[in-house]
Length: 394
Image (tube, rainbow, N blue to C red; front, side, top):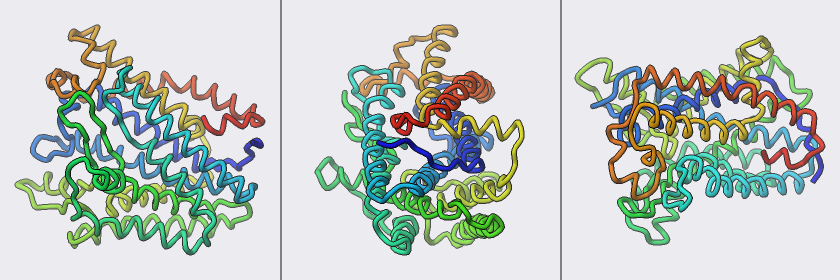
């Protein structure tokens, strides 16, 4: 395979870096906050505003990352033939699925028996990339229609709820219904990222790359970024206000104004609803608009993580999980409880485990700062070894 010479767009890498750093906050919360293994931070009966928005802000990560994966695919293909792009997307998609099943599941669980199998965002990106490898042969107008239908139309399928473990049910779980298979047994499968809207999101991200192709007028791109950003946000407020369509769970008036606001912004991620995508992609577009040509120490910091996202993803999860075990060893408890197995997860040993949200933020900042020099070193290595084709898979 030939070396990659795709153009680097700094604003895109900066945005990707920002969401990658924010993503670490959610994963630290998963492994460190009180009751995080069993409690939903968006449950209005138990959450607090700061806990709710700690979770809400991390909602930007997955949709932005999947969307920008499509954009990166387009930029990669600007100096490649369609067959070359197809081969890269198809093989990289397979590689990501392998990493999800074998590497990512182990990093999240530390269970050598794989009694708890996870299908998360890496799997969704890999499968969507395989689908995109076929979509690229279609006219852009058709890709646009397909992407819009998958994103805007998939909520019409919300009423279809499958049960059991028949072949048809399992296929539906992968496509549109979050599900835990084998709940309460020694072997469990978590299907967290139903695929239909993620495929559409990557397809639209691929088309979005047209705005960044060489020679595209910058002022026109900024106009489109502003329109798309404000348009997505406006669509969110209009549809959410009407409360008729666009999300699995309508908002309701609560006993306090604060809880009513939280209910309004409690949108569905699994699978990502139309409103979820609007409220996350809208601000992302405005970010790209605002940081089109910005370069300073802060943007350079986030740029590092944005240029080595897969390396950072696996490394940060490994560090977070190790830190969680060290925390148990230091402050008391059974560190074996942090070896997440199917049987152990359901035992309830972690129901009383955890630390305050303040500690979560401290650990989050520590993890990010610890990984920065490693990511920077790897970023420089990639930049200086563009002739190594295998680096495009890492």
